[in-house]
Structure formats: C-alpha cells, structure tokens
Image 1 (cartoon, rainbow, N blue to C red):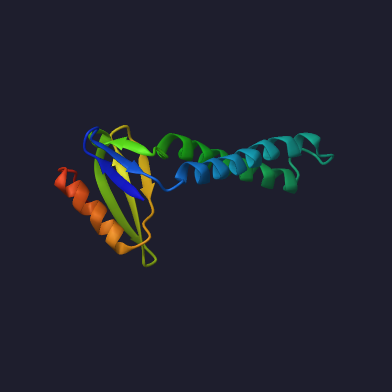
Image 2 (cartoon, rainbow, N blue to C red):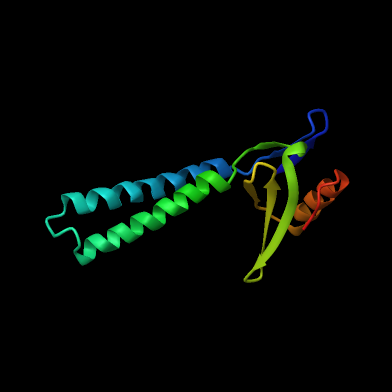
Amino acid sequence: MFSFNAEKSVLQIDDKLKWNYYLIRSAVGLTVINSVLFPLVSEEPLFHFKNLIWAVLGMISLILLLYSLIKKSTAAEIPLSEIKAFRQKALLGRKRCSLLLKNGKKRDLYFQTSAEMASMKNLLAAQDIPVK
C-alpha cells in the first residue's frame, strides 16, 4: 500500500484515492449543476419550498466541493519535505489517519491493518516527522 523511496526521499502511496475522490467530486458537481438548473426550469415560483430545498442543497454541495478541492490532496507521491505531520484521530471507535502537508492540504490515509499504521508511524518518526 505504501513504500518509501530513499533515493528520491518520496513517500509513495498506492490506495486509489484519486479515483474515489474523482467520483465523489463528480457526483457533488452534478448536484450543484442540478440545484441551479432545477429552479430555473421549474414551473413553480422561485421561492417555492422545493426550489428553496434545491438552493440549500446546492449551497451545501458547493461548500463541500470547494473544501474537497482546496483542502484535500490525492497525491500518490509525496516528498518528505512537504509533510508537516502525521495525525491520527478516533471517531466512533475508528481510527482515521492523515498526513498534514505544508501547503495546507491534508492527505487521508486508509490502512488495512494496525500493523500497516504502526509501520507508517515508525517510518515517519525515523524521518523526524511529528506524529500527533
């Protein structure tokens, strides 16, 4: 799933996250487009309940799309010089891990086993990257 290239000093992650985010961003983008078009072609008044629901849905989708584009990274190769920290959070008993990057983005990591997570922590700790 991940490997470290010592020659290039690059962390390589192979988890197909780019494709998953592409599908999610496409679906959210289509929701934004639909929320703009629906009130325009609707025969009901602009401030009808259905149109207002579509407007709220469109605004929420647009915010989520912008957050995904601005704050999330799907890079498969990350230079160690670009990694600020490794962060681990627990939510409802499930551990979520991510790399905080120096450009302000966050790269989510998904591990199959806790041994993979421990291996990643050890690798980053050996490279003097803080583990939070």
